[in-house]
Image 1 (cartoon, rainbow, N blue to C red):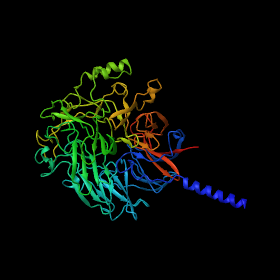
Image 2 (image 1 turned 90 degrees about the vertical axis):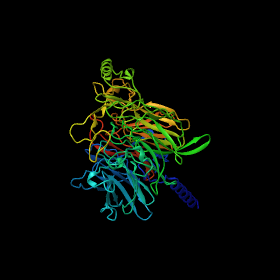
Image 3 (image 1 turned 180 degrees about the horizontal axis):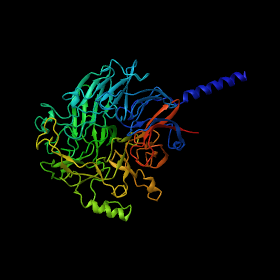
Image 4 (image 1 turned 120 degrees about the vertical axis):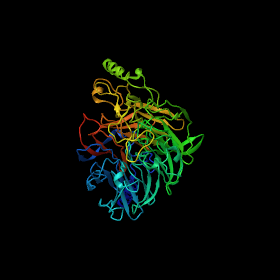
Length: 620
């Protein structure tokens, strides 16, 4: 009898343990969810045990260049994109299940860096949608083979169904497509110097690959705001493209896009007008592609002040009421927060005077929008007093060089034949990794640079340029620019004063910074006692329900970090084999929570070279 009771008790205990075991949780979005929050509800890894994180597995891809992919995990399988191939891995062990290498088509571009992939399922069948340069593939997740019923034997070409012949276009989808019901949506990168393709946003049938609708970011005749361009500009003008990707409010059926500059980036004399919908936050009806509302953050852009990261959906408490909003930041370092339904800004935005253009034939827009809150994430103007203090010699060199630049407040147009200061610069502010949101604290997190760049308007060499006032079909502008010139001292370090990078938490309830810390280091300077310098960072972070903000991103110290979301306190870090210039992913598989990140050595010329997915889980 006693044995029976004990056996029954043991069975009860075992059953309770089984019920209490953590359930596996898929992570089918590289950005956390359809709204791009970079948030995970997982809590197994928390503030108290994060220091026990250990490497669980590593999948090497060999020598790679630029690699910034965030994988997804569905059904115990991790799907990711390397620089040359698509891989499916066992999410617990990292063991390879299959690979697919998109074939190189003669005369067409090779697949390039892909930051994400997408999952579609109707409950019966599933598809993995992967972008490879100008192509979008639909793959069978079980085998990695293209679906022959989709597009052209498994893929569609984004250079088609655009403007003119396929050969005349250049569109590169560098991130994940958005999936909603039986539709998916594309945007993409285009050229930044004329001639360039337009930045059309398009919807496609997920099963067949057929085009459903197109939204023209450079309006066609009769479309809203066509008058913000010269007549017939739609035939030849390019850019105004959403290159970092879009997000979805699936419940409302709203697609949110944040676009970049029109071509040419740094000379706007041949495209008069505000140039809508360049540099704009757009809300589109996902079913029809109709514009619900828009906000243009930079008028008649001539600074390449893109929305360089996808927006993200947030919910903010204002005066005791919860407001569903969409937040975005651009290279100016400004942060914008809009009501999703109406486009109304949650914080005041002032239209303030801007400096005039001085390049031949150019006319700058006389005003530009300035949000009052949140504060800018990076400096927007520098003086000689803001230059490096690393050594007296570096300061002297920087002051002498700085004195040769054209310098002014934010929105000072590039001068003709004189290097002109751009602050924060052409990498931001914030870059493509974007921001992350903690719905409990209502904090928005951003990693940003704090350096400056310069460029100048210069004459283009050769006869194949247009004339002032009109971009001719197939013609290039009469002007170009002197390059993306980062202001570095004679030893290769930023020539402005440190910190050169920050990690910032914004309390969206107030619009004020909750905390702000230097982010990143140069190891060789740290050994000399110069710590907390901050550095450039590419890639984003993720927030967990257990109060962790997990991010790598820094170019030179090669670290993966975990911070306390409430305070910004560093709780754990580890050295990656290469720089983690990607956004991590967290998922639950086999009862364990994992954090995985793509690491590569592209940005650190002095560091080791290679590429690998590296996964971490709690050790004993």
